[in-house]
Length: 183
Image 1 (spheres, rainbow, N blue to C red):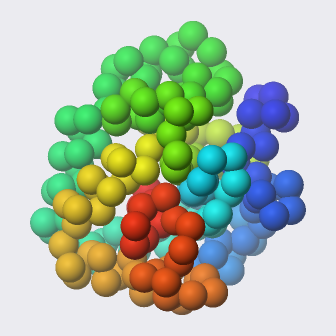
Image 2: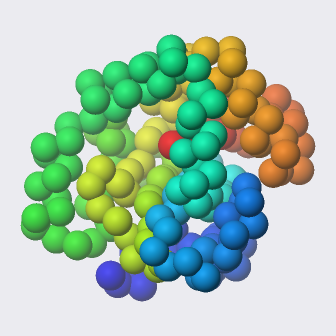
């Protein structure tokens, strides 16, 4: 993996790989066999929200989501993302750029979006491909948020409020009106 591409999923604050799970504090370096998600939201080229969460915490949070939301998320990602087309990227190259150059759901080029988010699954410092890494534009993120139940939105709001400086409704520069991306 080239270092420039890898830097997309490093912390924008430090320029280095994320060290700890935002939820449980687990050192991501101590258990190199445990996958973790890195999610980053951007307004233009400025990263305005980022975190890393281990697979255990991510799975636990997803289990708390309502059945309605789980079905809606599955439906969105199944219907809107061309998984076979994205899988062909894996067979042709191992660079991150082709995976995130446009919104995975609507094909809008990332450089043409006002806001977007990136999500990637890492194992140690290595990217895990297919279906990640991916980019979602702000418009598609808002569509995803509109599909979620009040229960799920509450769980996500609690996560944001617990782990970041201000309540979700008061975050000014997020890609979506009220909440950061949910990967």
